[in-house]
Amino acid sequence: MSARRGAPLTLEEISTTALRLMDEGGVAGLSMRKLAAELDVNPMSLYHHVDNKEALIRLICSTAAQRMELPPDDGSPWQEQLRALAVAYHRNAMEHPAMWSHLHDHPEIIQDRDLVIWRTLYRILRLAGVPEPELRRTSDVLHAFVMGFVIAETRGHLPDDPEEVERGFDTAIRLITRGVEGLSG
Picture 1 (cartoon, one colour):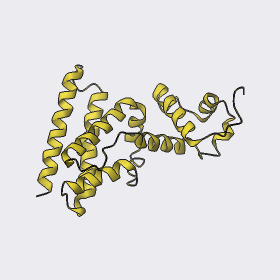
Picture 2 (spheres, rainbow, N blue to C red):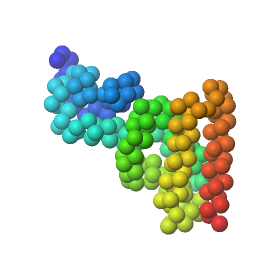
Picture 3 (cartoon, helix red, strand yellow):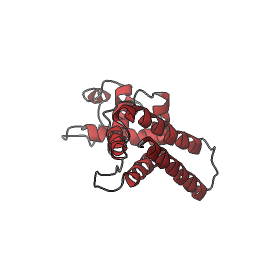
């Protein structure tokens, strides 16, 4: 092991490198041994930070969610904030398709309601006037709707024309916004 170290290994360094490896080779292309080689550390060093590959993948997903450009609570209309959240989610899914594909095979990872994306969505839905007892159901449906679009896009069920896909996503967001408006009445 050459250049490594005096500097301690960080979770940020681990998750950034692991996400890159997952982007390059999918979940199957990510291993603790390969990650350790990329970080120029002994594989056992990783286990001081994550228990196993599944814990590593959870870390990657959490890190990717935290890096999303989420709409701030800045007083802008909830419709704009909901649109910004959907666009950020879509962009992240397109940037990290292997990770998002894995999430759909393991939905328990994304169901952690303490993730910043869920807290942001709940805040926006409250601004929209969605009743508190409906927040969970509404957020689940919106997540399924947007992810359905992402899956259709990544699996080739939409036109190859990027402008047409963008128009389709814009239509989806307008439908979502109008649907949420109907819940707040």
